[in-house]
Length: 294
Figure 1 (spheres, helix red, strand yellow):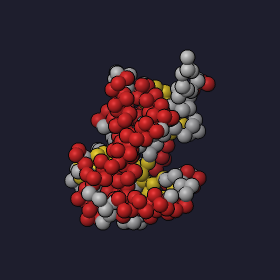
Figure 2: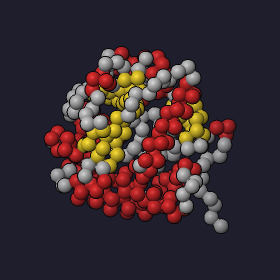
Figure 3: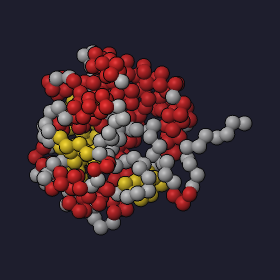
Figure 4: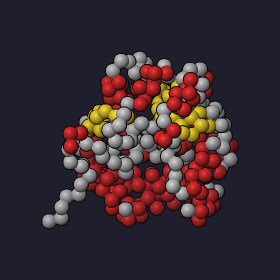
């Protein structure tokens, strides 16, 4: 892992168009070399985008592997490049991070699992302190680099799932914006089966519940690639009106519908290699089982 991190450090000096094309090349190779992840990706695309032909889904799956690979290698820029370089590469929509809006009251920054999500974190971290949940890495060297990379600008608070909900609530009460990434399958605990692209998906209701408890506003933010390897776009969407209301399931369905709309805008950049539909209701069989060979 130290060798890989050293290689990433060396690569981060490259011009972004060169690094991006290198990432695409590695992603194309991984599409061939990782059949289990390719199967998950294509299964997700068949479930979520049945209107596409199988050939179109294969093209989209390959593009996703390329995008995911690019995001990994380009992360070195987020971790080690100068702040001036990051500001040149990150295009903000609107033209600046809405710091005053997100710090005037408790704010949940809803950040779905697009491959460039770390760019959104960097854009905010250069302007104000924030907090977020993160997955502690098994490799200690990588974990140290990850934590350092995410906290090298303004002070941040990084929580693990083992920390529970209390630190998040305290951070929100202190008006520290909280990055929330609720669109993965963590099982049935604290989740409801809510449609995602028309398929029941175990979806955490935490966004709605925390917003209801703390009075936090929900401000979505999504990072995507700019065309032609020119950098990244970080878009802050309007705060959701009348959210969450009194129905937590309806609020969670509203969240999934918003994410669906954003996925359709940049379909190759959503995290399709994750088993989004792993947990099934009422003992239904796995959607990821391979068909038996004839």
